[in-house]
Length: 76
Image (cartoon, rainbow, N blue to C red; front, side, top):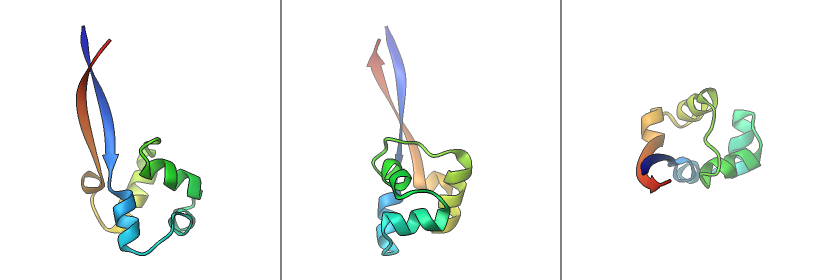
């Protein structure tokens, strides 16, 4: 049987680098830890909706521009 798994991909690292910010600086600006920013960038953590909106506002992009969902079939 086949099911669909979803992976959330993001461009946070690219956007952060384009502004010349460290993970710590971005975290401080958003009120989260450097570790949280690292986990988002490495796609080990999908941020809450309020944090996703904060990231989008900070970088002046839409959530859809920053985060996208990829689906891939996986065997159960």
